Image (cartoon, rainbow over all chains, first blue to last red; front, top):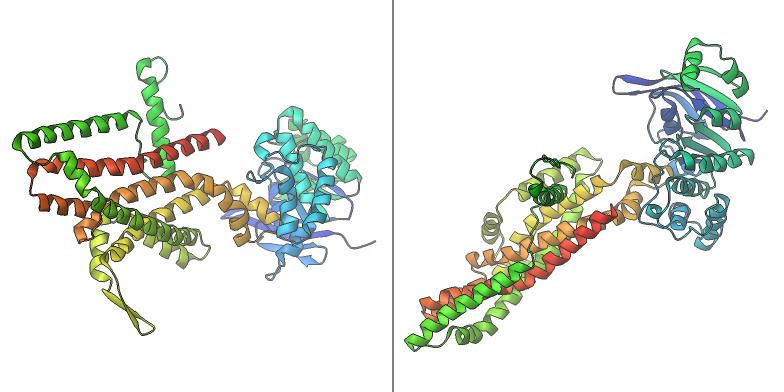
Length: 244
Length: 292
């Protein structure tokens, strides 16, 4: 048994006096797809943001590989090249074309050779089925297309883990599917994925392991078939009854 | 209509005006500056007024057996044009220096270091809320008449000190334009950049500021129009620009009937210079409105 890729222990975080995370611990092994579900405000997104050091946490520890995310002298670039993140609002850079969006960070942050990055970026555009849209600006693309460019942009950093933060919540129903297909393919290829989602069916199909969070703690977790069909906790049952 | 108080049932005749005013006040709120607007028919109106003045002066001059107003204007034109060139030079230098300093001050306003942020905010507010003429007097009096650099002594001409006086309010206004533009970029852009490993400086340089340029251009050009129209203030502190030279010419002519045509010609010169700027600004605003 190799060491887990992500190790989270007793993670707590408050915004002001409001506790958002109240002691969260779990491991993610390489190649696993983890689904995180739960009601709004239960701290799902905050877990992802803490892993990526977008927000500092109060206590506990997070390790991504050998990188200690809580260390005061955290090497942010080392962390971010390991951890890719995709946001609900895509957050593409509107002044750059799709291909430039994908290429920017490896060239400007990692100082990689532009020609090599371009080869990789074009391959990723094909992978997310957006061949031919390389020269389009984000404003000219649909929500689903923008979200797939955002996925390609993260992948171009060649991360070991991908964090998906409610990536389909802002999309039209008809474009949700194309994004979910892309994520499913990634998971099947063995990319380690943490997926915060409201798409229960998707979590059930794709995730190897599902965590249900409520009020800042992990209430229940297990393999998706069991968790969705036979939840043991009252809160899980109540939540699943409401959303399914 | 976003913020209209009228709906379709009340006074439909007022709707176009209400829409126009709403759009305009939205723009002004966004830029934090009153916007200069010169519709095309004003050119015609101004030209007609000028012709009228000139005609009246002409008639008076001819009946009194004196040189015509047109001849007088043409005679003084070369001198006043040189003065106008100084107005333009002052505006260019003040705008250039004010923009560079204002960019730095504006970025300091979004610094993560509280002393830098508060200091630059205070500086911006101070110079933004000071009357330009008072600043001008202040600079004329406070700045030295000559400076010695590496043993060489230079005179500091009056116009240069006046330029410094105009640079300060330009700087403060640019600072606010920059701060406003940076803060108008959605937070998600910062987060996305951060998640891709960009540092704060890199994010500003590569992602935030390039998106700001388009937003900053109209208020920046508007500020320039205000600046060039404020350069005649320098005549009050003794700078020999177009306004001062026009007054000088009138003193030399000692003819009351030339007052209106001569100042009218100067007004028209400013109008000819500023109007295209206002039109381009308006066009940029419209394009910006469509793309957001």
